[in-house]
Image 1: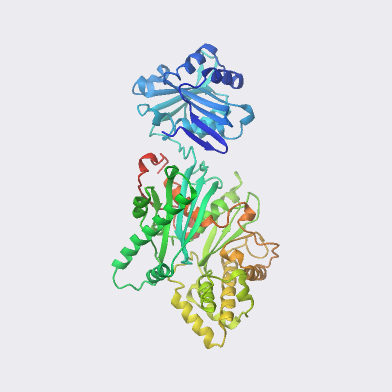
Image 2: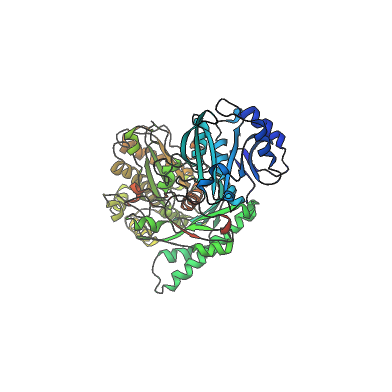
Length: 600
């Protein structure tokens, strides 16, 4: 049973039996008394005195050691005995109060949801309890709302002759909740992945705040998620490891055993990196609940990722959610772009704003056209959905070319090399004849098989045959990535993107540090979209960390999977319906992170 945890600067505790009951009584009397909440002194004192014997349970909220709210319950309940199996299986919430100076911080909702949470609420404290009840004044809308948001169900409202009022009864039954509770506390999640650039394994540790679910569909979200970056690191591949991955991605192994071995080996590499970052960060491993692992993509049509999640779970001891894409593919989608999920949750503009173009440059590229969050009651805004695709290449071919120009360099720092060359339009037009760029209907998703290293070799030979230098080849590849993105916006963005409809552009990925690429992207977008762009924004402009976002995305995929929330956007992937993608491999901690009783 977890007895102490923190949310939004407020510490919540299951109070010890020795806690000062006089403090509780006077706090309740001072801040809980109102025309809608009568507090009889004798019965409240008697109730709180049972904290010492353990028959009463109190969950308290503290800010800098100051009590700012609490909810208390007592085992037994003759009044509602007719609805339970026995008197001993009932618990009743007697007192619920929040300091008025701290109202509006969701302390009340947190307390009600904690009281019935499966890890720290009454059902964890006393498994024999099957039902939790309370009663409130029917006109006490604030209290009724807090209990409903915490997962309680309104059973009935009746004329209460004894209290000369209308009383509403609320109930939470273990395992039979009619409304999803979601999370009542945050969760530490590791995100792990190896991208199309094939430069290493990226790992981050993130603290996620509880989800805000949609009222119309509890497997959807009603607003952006909140998370904090605790640690983030790239573990670079050795030359031999990178060649091993590229050999797998070439899909030329004659014996399938090689792919099976690769699945285990990459899982071992991921686990080693995860254990390393946890050790280096100093974070208590027992506090980490989950790993969201994407693995290493080796095929894009259909998608296939290596890095067995059971291997990771066994070697880290932490439960792992992974293998996300097959669910979307089974529902008729491409299983990509995954970035649309992050963009649609984290990067959507506020209600009433212009649409936003969200661009990601990794080894390949992706773009999401994000509508603003809907305005409740505005039917048109509620029907707008994100649109997304993978335009094509990112920096993969650019980085390969840089290594030819200077083997000591990993990438074109600031784009200085490409800037010194010349864009060869005739060569660029040959590149754009590639079948991938000829697609005219969504969904469009990229995989390593679309732009293999062998294609780069063909294009480099073509460039040489046309009499161009490697530096000109790099400049033209840089222009290709910028041009293809602008063309994707023109061809698939629609009325909310084209003809000057929006100048809200967000760019992330290593290319943000390539000023030459950013200049060419801005030039192409302005020309093809007929718009003046004052600035291409970065993640930092939106208050997010640009270095760790992709690791956060796969931690998010795992977190959403674990909590039965959609983690793919069908309007981007082409699936027939939204899905919760992923499998879960139990780790040593699985007994302590039971799945929530969210709807199926």
